[in-house]
Image 1 (cartoon, rainbow, N blue to C red):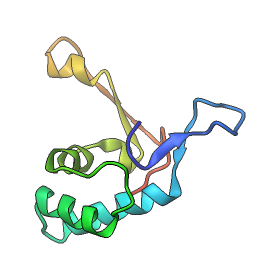
Image 2: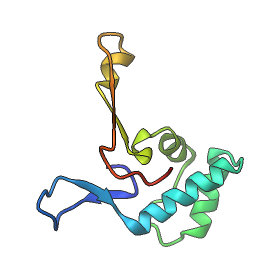
Image 3: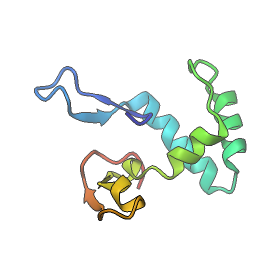
Image 4: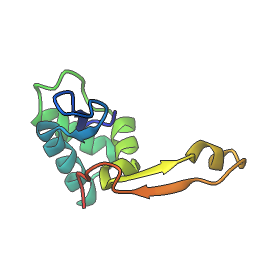
Length: 102
């Protein structure tokens, strides 16, 4: 489950993925910092300084993975691994989850 999302355990479809508002604010902040020109490492350091209450510290690789994760834009790529291996084609699905970023 990407950071900023959670399962809707109180809803009728307990497997549905929904936005986790407190963590979604951090995701938006990560993209904001990165899009202003900070490196992934600088972004991680800023978030770690701004959010000392988080259980796990962000690392450069974590930020890099988040920046490339299509889920944050509400997209899901089905069969991605098969395409990477050259044995199939992926399908990009829109509006699978509510986007955190525009």
